Image 1 (cartoon, rainbow, N blue to C red):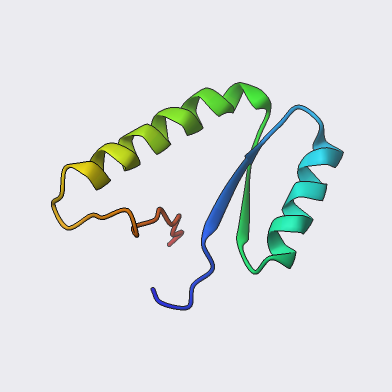
Image 2: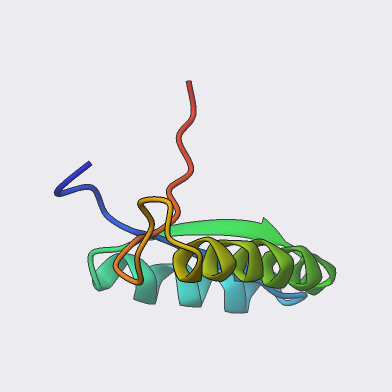
Length: 72
């Protein structure tokens, strides 16, 4: 997926603030993924902990790996 913008997950209770962060992310050439309310931060943390665990255990994953959401 070379050349595909990396996803940046955004959570927060202030919708206007999430839009501002999404605009900043987009201006940096990345892809904002708005997951909604701040209560979803816990899920994002768990998701990223899993990704880091995969990076440290090998299996073809390295610290240069990333997560990409792909919709059919």
